[in-house]
Amino acid sequence: MTAADETQNVEPASVSSEGRLSPDAEATYEPQVIEIGWLVFEPMDAADLEAVEGARKQTRSFLSERFGQFHWKMTTVRREQRPSETRVEPAALLDDGVAERDLRRWDFTVIVTPIDLISYYRKDAVAAVSRSLEGIVISTSRLDPRVSQPDASDSQRVAAMTRRLTALVLHGLGHHTGLAHSEEAGNLMAPLETLDQIDQAEAFNASQQETMAQELAGVADRRLEETPVRSRSAPFAFYLKSAWLNRREIITAVREARPWEMPYRLSGLTTAAVSTMLVLIMSAEAWDLAIDQTAALVVVFSLLSICATTTFLLLRQRLLLRGRTLSEQTVTTNVATVAIVLVGIVTSYAAIFLLGLSCGLLFFRPSILEAWTEGSTHGGWASYLKPAGFGAALAMLIGALGATFDRNHYFRHITAVDEEV
Image (cartoon, helix red, strand yellow):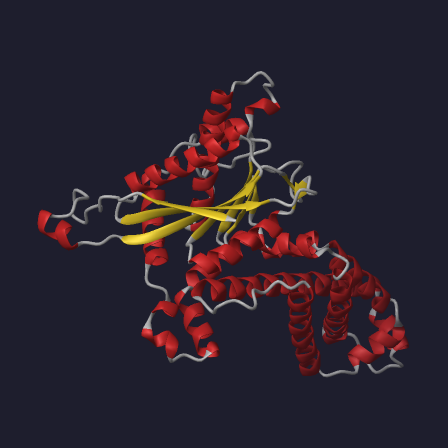
């Protein structure tokens, strides 16, 4: 593996009303550094490599012009792709990017590969964005004009791929700074569904640039592990401090991941949980057992079930970053991952609970329940709520076992990848 570092000195932007520093301030002002790492997988042909280098320069130029208050540093690391791969998992490349990010203290990672990406949300994908892992994976395979124009010259290929790579990187950086999608024509945060839309994406609007500047200031701040406080902090205390300092980033990462869609995405867990709930609904013994419990016990059992299911999935699917130097970025990634899975499991529990409650109210009259429970119940909401909660808690525990049939990369993808382009 070889690495080539190239840094361009950027004149600091001003803080005056006109956007310029005073002459006296310029002499002492040192802009904050933001480093974007480019992890490039080879082999690539000459046109691809030239396009990647061109996109790196264009990205730095674009950001330096609009956010000159920061010193933009770009680093390129090249690595050999495994030759047997014909399609690659975005989550696997993102994990490679996280390893390089932690090693080199990057703020954002761009991973470029010449191989097609495996897509789960759409037919084909040229990029995958992850807010929680602070990176974007891009495949040059479908960005190449030769896919639709076999006679395209090398210069045409380089120009088109450079433009498209730059737009995708800036789109990913927009997600990283918390920007939402925009319907504005030519906006870099417009939904990029086709190559034509990628070609048309050119700029951020003034409001977006203001939001990005505020977020980037936090990114460029000195990290907690770089302060003297770090040496006196126990790991648990460091986690708490880092999570609190990066609470906005964590909340945004959870929102971008849309964990409330997890019941739909995790078919193994959902199928096992629904099947369990339907079996319990049809069992007189299950109704009798659930109704005989106190409401407090059902609530505690449900909470324990949610925590146990979340913990099992995090460990079984190896979703947490471990074995690395403790840093703010690692804490942010891990806390966001736990929150994403937890919200997804809570959503799944709520869906199973509502299913059980609805079936009970629709199909089981109080007279049936009295016969099943030998007259120990006389109807009422408690006779339906407790079995629904008890059954949902059991269903989630069984569902966790069903989720083990989902591949690790798939599980990693749905918890980490916010958008496929």
